[in-house]
Image (cartoon, rainbow, N blue to C red):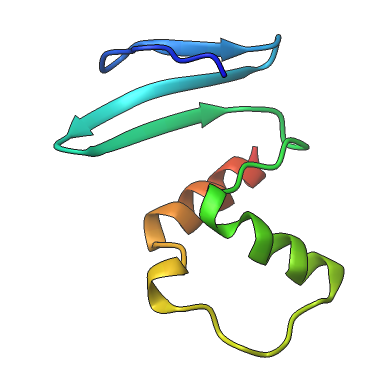
Length: 84
């Protein structure tokens, strides 16, 4: 695993077409901006299994715990990313 330190406003470039930008650091929370092609899926790690199960049709009808549900900002960012 590559570990990098970045400050607010600094970037990490992955390959030729993915850029991760540190937008804000507040306490133990970091706000990241991710620029990537439309066909690149970007999902929070804790939701990856749920998203894959949903797409595979393996949904058992049990709702996600409230803490695991995406926030409005996360959903809005995902919608804006898909609109590009």
